[in-house]
Image (cartoon, rainbow, N blue to C red; front, top):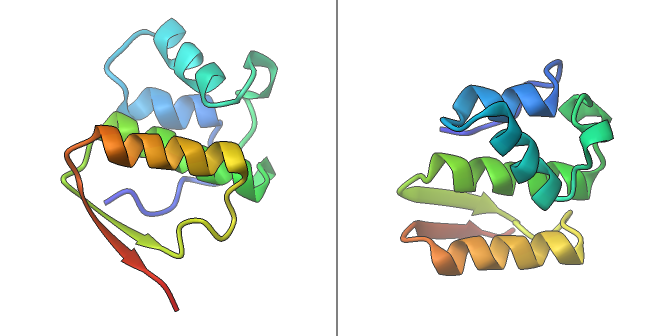
Length: 101
């Protein structure tokens, strides 16, 4: 279960802990998700809503779960985040449950 990202750890470390690639590969993944090198030391508590959502999408794509439960998934995601979520869901073989209130 992914749950919440640790708020006191750098986003680089969070992704590094679940990745099997090199540190350079982790940095490239973060850059591709919209986190420049100079921002990879930030903790999740320092990110805005859109950045937190992009980080969660990156973590999901790294962990490759079988099931994802998304509670109001697009409420706090910017356009780039919505597109990244859409691409991840289309290109994965994951079962998705959407919950809306």
